[in-house]
Length: 202
Image (tube, rainbow, N blue to C red; front, side):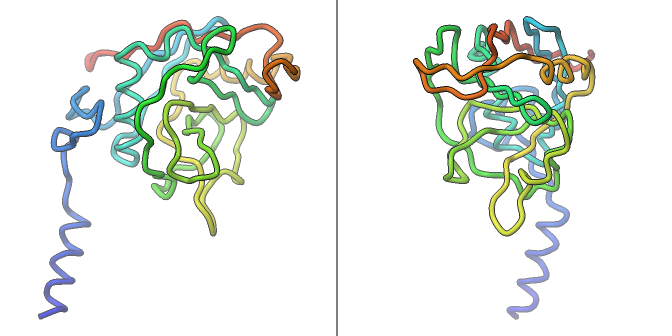
């Protein structure tokens, strides 16, 4: 009897396809039947488009979309840029005023998506499930950020248009800002002007 139950459970896991509509997570109702929503990011150094992967990272994508539609990313800065590594943003306004965060997100780094060049991932603290609103773009293939024996950093989409803007991050001059003790901060603000969920017929 136990074997039968195990087999039925396995079949459900493999074949089951739960719609995002069934989730109560913030953002789950945003294009609920679209597993690959597109988000346009307008910045002070150019615009680009991200294709999110709700199929592989549902909790992360839903959270990100909820911030986007509430315009929580508009007017933020990329506060940490390490050339040929990552460009991190989403958490601070100009003047380094921290934006409010929503609840933390479960770590979905084991979803099979890799921290390859042009991917977008969630930033977090040492606690693997501490991600909230900050994200980063991989400026090269960063295998060290993928899960191994420990947790990795959750990839939840890829830049599909405007990759030259992502390349431009590696040309940005950075410095240490002693007043706020921030490393690798752009000398001139790189601003995320506006983030928009694109319509389905885009």
